[in-house]
Each structure stands twice: as structure tokens, then as C-alpha cells.
Length: 386
Image (cartoon, rainbow, N blue to C red; front, side, top):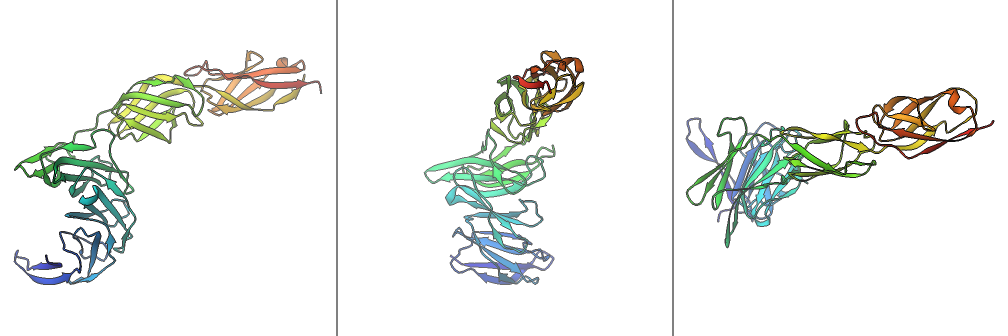
């Protein structure tokens, strides 16, 4: 029932004597973590008893402590420190058993914590551990979940960091099954394959070990539709899409995409995309579609849009979307010598013989000579008498 945190000092031979006693009114400390949170080279202390407040105790450099700015966060039985947002200081990570979450509070570098995220996990997180589980250079988190007194838990929740201290669950198996009432969790490379495995100490006198396997390379089996305009939603089917880090269409990056689950991914055809193959990149490798997607070309502008009949050869610039390498501009049904500038621009030489007579002429773009076909609708070009 004590509200004190007591420090015991080591004489260097493993013999400890009394040090400072810090009183935390209204808090019955059940969790404590040590780390240099204010960047002055000594170890500070954070302590909590699940009251909704974490006390920050700053070291004076002589193992006596002064009160810092307390943190609004729950840490019923466990809290830890780690640089989760990659800015070089230690952030607070607290297992909030009463709210089935892990509460992240970010350090401003001076030992003042705020903001962050409350990360949902399974029922009754008793503890939390940090480690780079997916080898992307940032700290991920795992919690050991004991459930409720009426329904004991037997899971470990795994949540991955995006590098900025924002955590999310993978689409498949976000929680691992372990022994009943896992009181403690730890991360270590047990099988010597250079990644962190998960261990829990369970109430039924067992230790559960879950090995971290190498990511499996993704595969693409199909996509639908086979063609479409810029903005069309494409659904890709395959395997092992979880954790996808990049998607491209015809070499053009797809900035926004959705991993629906491990076997389904969706995206909208981006502006500037050309016909081509779909690629999906994950930590396990890169998958490339066996067929190419047809981006239907669209003409948005001609420059010039008119000319005087009989005025001689000129260069026509065609602007639009979905142009593929090898695309041809057609003038009144005749293919022109065409230069590919980008997926949004072509230039073509219109010979003098094609503009000898006044009238309205049809212009269109065909990708038939590109990776995959597709023909635009018609644009009009006007030849006047003067």
C-alpha cells in the first residue's frame, strides 16, 4: 500500500544500500522504467500505479530525483521506454490493461511527454515489449494479454510501427495464440536467424515460443478489370500482400492503395500511369502481374487545334492520359510519325499532304504498338481556308 519509490545504490560489488525515497501521493507504484528522458546523461525514472498518471522523476545526477511533468497515461502493471518515432529521444509506451490498449506518449527531448496514439490490442494487456520485428529499422510492439477474470486470455498482440510512432495490426493474424494467462512477454533471437522471436511466461507453468519467420514473397494471380481510364479502381488478387510497401502500374508509383487482406489489394489508376504490368512490393519481395493492365488513352487537348489548309508540315502536340510507349497518333485515320514524351503527352509530325484541303479532321491515339492496346475517343482538328 506504499506510495513510495525507493532507490537502492550498488557499491560496485553487487551490494546495495539505501538511497533516495520518493513519495508519489495518490499513486501506488506498480510499474517503473529507467532511461535518460531529458538528454542530460543520467538515468531518470518513470513510475505508475494504473491511476491514469505516470510520474516523471528527473535525476539530478547524484541519484536524487526531482518531479518532472507528469504524463496522462495508464500503465497498470508495465511501462517501457523506447524511441518509437525515430527522433533520438525515449518515448513512453504503457500497457493499459483497463482499456485494452497500449498508450504511446511522445517525448519532446526534455522529458515532457504528450500526444501519441492509443493502440488497440487484445483484452487485458499485462505487459509490453519493444523490438524491430520486421527488420525495417523501427521499434514494433508486442503485448501479453491475460483477458478478463471471467475469461482468461491466451494471446500476444503484434503491432507494427510505421517509423513515426504510429502502430497498426497486420491484416492477418494480428494476435498470436500462446499459453493461458501469459504474465510476461520477451523478445529475443532464439533460433539464431537474426530476427526477434516472441516468448511468454504463462500461468500454467509453461513458456510459449513463437518463431519469427522470414516474410514470404508475394504473388499476383489476377486483377480486374483488365483495362480502364485514369481513376478506375483495380482489384488485385494473389498471396502475401500484408505489409505492402509499394505498388506501381506500368512503372508509375501508386501513392494510395488499400491492403484489404493478405490476398486482396485495391488501388485507383493514378494520373500519369501508362499501360503496363502491376507490381506489388512487400518485405518478402516483389510480385509482378503476368498480364499488363490497359490504361485507356484519353485526349484532353491538341496544340495547335487548327491550321490553315495547305500551310505545310507542322508538329502536333497531343495532351491527355494513358499514353503508352510506342503509342501512335492518327490523323484522319492515317498513322503519324509519333514521339512519346510521357504518359500524358505525345508529339506527331503532320505532313503537308494531310492538310491540303479545308475541313474537320479526326485525331485519335492508339496504344496498339505499346505494351498493351487501347484506343482513345476522337478529337477534332479544323483546317480552315484562311
